[in-house]
Image (cartoon, rainbow, N blue to C red; front, side, top):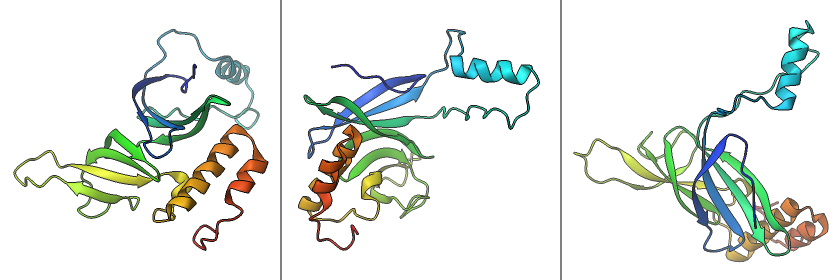
Length: 187
C-alpha cells in the first residue's frame, strides 16, 4: 500500500494506535521545496497578479504552515489508506510519543504547571527541579473526542467507526455507527 503525505512534508515517525488497529499517525516536518518549480495554481495567481488584476479577483494562496504536523490515516484492506485529519503541533509540542484513542501523547516544554494554553491536561511532569529542560508529557484529545474524553469503550468504538466511515465516504454506515449511542454527552 502507498500513501502520500501533504506537500513539502517529510515523515519523521509513525505510530499505530493500540486500541484501533486501523488508525495510523505520522509526524511530519516541513521542508522547503528546493526544486525551483512552483505549483501550477500558485504560478497562475502570480501571473494574474503581474497582469494587474486586483487582490479581490484572485484568492491568494494561504501561507503554508512550516511547523510540525501530525497526519492521521485509516488503513484497511478494503479502503486502502485514507487521510483522516491533519493536526498542527502547538507551541511547546516537541514530538509525538504515541496515541491511544481518544488521546495523542506529546513530549513538550512546560507552558504552565497544571494546564497548557488550550486546556490540554498535563499527564506527567519531570520531577527533578534542578533540571532546566522542563520537558513534560502532554495528553491532547483527538478532534472527534473533544469534550468526550471520558466516555465508555462502546461509545469510543462507535465514534471511531463514525469517523472511519465518514473518512471513506460511507454516510449510511457512519450514521448507523452512532445512532444507538445513549450517552447524552455525545448529543
